[in-house]
View 1 (spheres, rainbow, N blue to C red):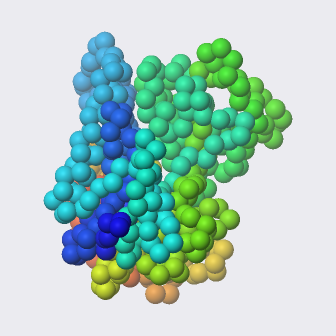
View 2 (cartoon, rainbow, N blue to C red):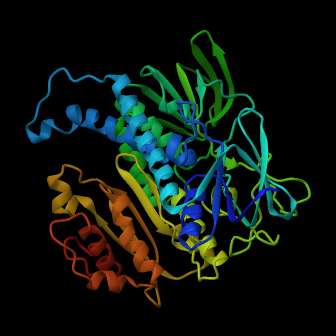
View 3 (cartoon, one colour):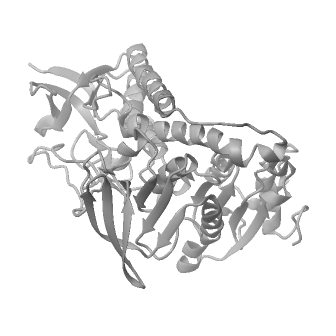
Amino acid sequence: MSEKFDVIVIGAGPAGYVAAIRAAQLGLKTACVDAFVGKDGKQALGGTCLNVGCIPSKALLDSSKQYYNIAHNLPVHGITVEGAKVDLGTFIGRKDKIVKQFTGGIGQLFKANKVTPFFGKGKLLKNNDVEITGNDGSKQTISATNVILASGSVPIELPFAKFDNKFIVDNAGALDFTEVPKRLGVIGAGVIGLELGSVWKRLGSDVTVLEALPDFLSVADADIAKIAAKEFAKMGLNIKLGAKLTKAEVKGNEVALTYEDKDGAHDLVVDKLLVAVGRRAYTDGLLAADTGVKVDERGRIVVDEHNHTGVNGVWAIGDAVRGPMLAHKGSEEGVAVAEWIAGKAGHINLDTVPWVIYTEPEIAWAGKTEKQLKEEGIPYKVGTFPFAAIGRAVAMNEAIGQVKMLAHAETDRILGVHMVGPGVSELIAECVVAMEFKGSSEDLARIVHAHPTLSEAVHEAALSVDKRAIHKGN
């Protein structure tokens, strides 16, 4: 007889492992199945985000920023460093050490909360049985009253630019280059393309980004995207919009590209090619044919507003379902589902999920863009404030960008906040809290913000909504 649990979670990424821990905290006998293999050949909990995504990319971004600052930001402070160089082995090794620390940390959290980990690929069978196939081909079956599907996502592969993990790479490959490529091609000017393109540009690579869409960062507010594009151009990122890759061929130790734009076909030769055109839900082999769980035309698991699949005791969360493919969104869905299973009031609001791009400058937003409000016919008013007028930003020599706040023209409720500038990955949190509590721009305008801080830009943007900002003309 198979071992019986209250909850089995398939997937140990930021959605799955969080769901497992919260379920165990609520007194449910919980197992978590995951097949991710670390560099040491052992199970590495944490999914894409922790192993080859969010955390390692931020480690490299921070390391590359330190190096970039030596030449570009320290001289204005009167600090000069001669002969700075990068030891790429140590550079990558630091990233690997951080990943190992946190994957091990999840293992310790599983032990502390009595979550039982299983190493292998999980497949949902009928009656909430789960078949686990080990890397050696061995199989075992466990069962549960509730199964949470958290299988995550994988990079989209272009048919004419398939990953070879040497010259044409995905996000994981771009984290482990053994040398700085002289010429790096990036397909896609989204979050992954911009972040990893920035890493290698700071280290000296000549980076060309090909974006098929005509507008830069179309998911963000247009004003914020315009400022960001200008700063990336100053940094030396060569971003070509409306440029569609049509061919990629490895020739010797190079990759020959052909792309098309409004002016016709063009050729480009690079040493490495990062394909970052998006991700798709990873549901391959996840579901037996008779489970009754449905997937949509994009391969995502179909769920209701409570992340239930419609099959008794089967739930799905994270990148494998609708909504933004963001680690924190998946984690909160995991908490909510665990609480719903335990008979409690879980909560997830997809309208207030913050987005962050960890480039230099950072980009962050939550809620609707000005374009969306116009298209939906929602009356609104706008407040903006530049970091150039913030004393702390000027003192840091990072007086770039602005905060833009959108509020309902009649109720003053905050509908969206968009930022580009220093530390905005942290500043957005205040705005998310205000939006979650249905706050108004007046609420943020009336709150005392410490001086001198970067958060004063949020305060002044809120004041600006009603044209009463203090430190700029209205």
